Length: 202
Image 1 (cartoon, one colour):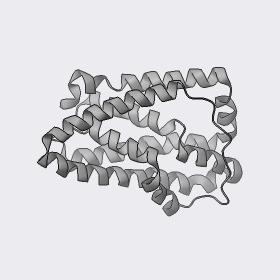
Image 2: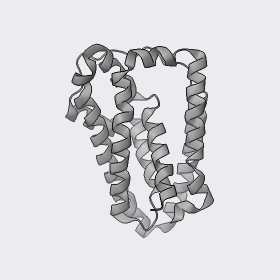
Image 3: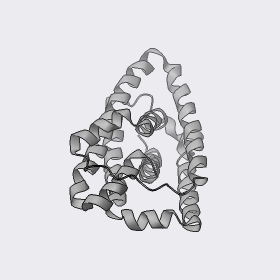
Image 4: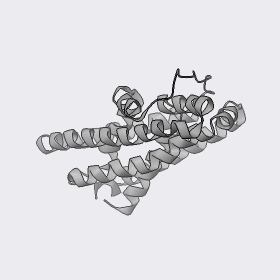
């Protein structure tokens, strides 16, 4: 995998991890209600559970690509379209609704299991494998993507638990929300450069 591809993937992992979604909304509420320390198992469950999902998706798709090489090209196109759609959704997002407080903080295993029923996590995993794993990368490339995703995801989602009250107040301010979302959307579109320029084939 090339340096350009890894940098582009890191940008993708950061944007998709830090922007609003079920995990971050739940961590926002957990940080507010239970504090950062009690939310750490939840944070680790999200990141490591998601890494396991990426490995599973990558292993399955890798076998599919060997049988149907054209499927790899199709998934890269779908991944690029999804990234553009996600960038548009981020740029035009409205302020979040108040996060509902959970009855108790998620533990590690509960948070890890939640990833397998989280639609955003599935889309993120499939998008990552389809768009950023080279066709000849094999399981090693999938493992690198999974570990890098976990490394970027953990501190990104931890922000929501650690700074929930401040971040929620900031994001519900229309001007700050638009600035944040547009910046995230631009970063996500820029992460497509290696994919669309052909560097993603290396």
